View 1 (tube, rainbow, N blue to C red):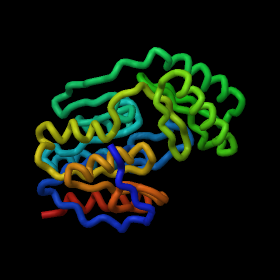
View 2 (cartoon, rainbow, N blue to C red):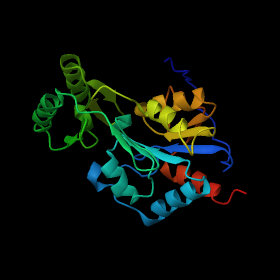
View 3 (spheres, helix red, strand yellow):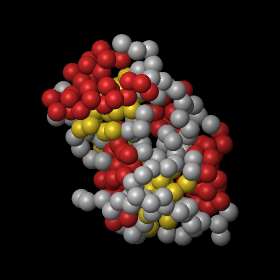
View 4 (tube, helix red, strand yellow):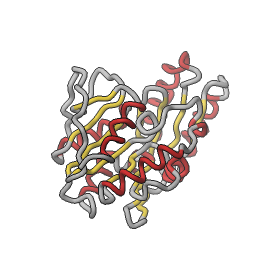
Length: 252
């Protein structure tokens, strides 16, 4: 599938309305600010309450679509999002609790060992293993970014894992569904079917989600600045996203 990309910075999105809207929300950098380490992102009562209220307002048409595993989504949002997709689409849980998950690639362990060897050279590098992928974070070691990306490209070529580039991390994942595929799957099921999808995310991994939303008659909202994106609208940061979402609760 080709992406319709724009190099201009998109405008702010229009106010949300509850009628016919389906929300798909990334987590880190969208609903929650980044932290030095992934495990440092903690639950927040106000954010949990907002997600629960939005889900109720939309008649259940809200799903979190994240690079995090489902267990981590549940920890950070305290179970406020029954419908969720984790590991960029490799895990998906329907609103009724059914979980579909792609088995881990047989070369995942080999890739994790190589990333751990590399991370052992700098205390600012962090390896995050997941069930079907492994990520290398260099937020605390920005000088190692290019070396990290080069290693990830090499491992992807040797193992058949899919390279997921990010602004502050690289991830090697089992081949399988993307965030965009998760949006399409949710939109084919109640209560999402027939609604207009709006996907909100901040990273390169969210571009598939933006494209799927566009394809299905909705739109994407890019969080932060980026030179090229398929999103039609943009918001500057997590705080702006939360305020934009908060106003939906009072929409008539």
